[in-house]
Image 1 (cartoon, one colour):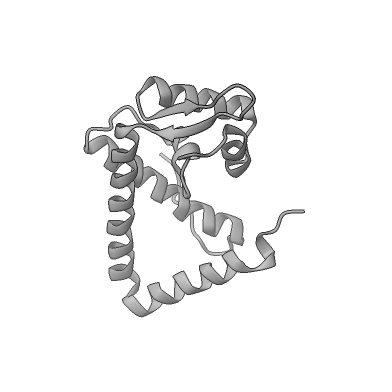
Image 2: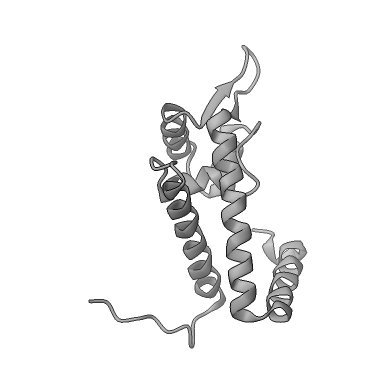
Length: 148
């Protein structure tokens, strides 16, 4: 039995990571319940915002902070499961494209996230939730997100 972790004294990395992982678990649970039962948490490295549609695998790897080889394994898995296809011609970089099933899963992710926002807004109160989103948008646009 594990001891519950208290947020008191945690630094910003953990305070951001825990909610983000909870959202990812919620997305996968919702997708699985909606019939996309072959998707798992690692697939979120590909399915995270802004999504993989018409993007090169190397860009997806960079976004996810993983090697190209690891990303290609995930892409191969999603391709085998029918969520994506890779397109390209000789001399041009291949890009990832959603299949019809991939577009349906992406739409479900949007629906799940909208539900999460409604629930978090109810939990925190509309004003505080709006402030949280405003602060996160400000951080998003700030030079703090630029990595050295």
